[in-house]
Length: 263
Image (cartoon, rainbow, N blue to C red; front, side, top):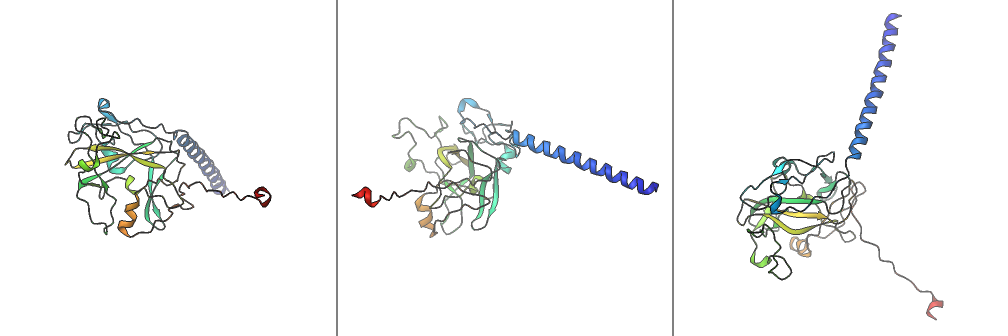
């Protein structure tokens, strides 16, 4: 009887402890949700050095680490060493049922959220080899910017400034997994043509920014350019899935006039 009573009391205590743990876990989850309202970062300037790391934790907390020049560049890639290796915790790389990998929002992201793609500078590989490289146009070494008021349109001329490509292979970069929208989809992020690094440097980066609020688990997409598909002999397809949707283009409605209206 005593043993049975002790066992019953033990089960009650365990059940009570389990309920307490569940409440703590629920409270922690609610707290995490409450802290994931993200404030968009401000574009880095020369006067801001050292920079605060742009990345956020998986719980939505902004990294407090400071970032300084790595190769003498005026504005470094705005990620600390840890987040260069692991990637921004606000973003998540997932498996795609058809196209290998995809990049999604770990939690709701606001419009104008900034991200940095980065890689090792080098030569462009053949298009028959799978690559996620991006052409590199280093910023002005005196201003740290690709915006030049003396150049028509405000941007540094590409034809005069090409310096190889940035290859993210073997790095901790996660932006490389952002897909291109399909025929029925639209991009929700874009490049700002604001690069990081030095001409002939070892590493470089490119700023991207979200164009709209992005709900949790939604794919991040940017336009690769029409030539990307034709050069590789690949047919462009929609990439959104039920689990990881993509933003859709608005459906064009055709207005059919009645016969009475035409008379």
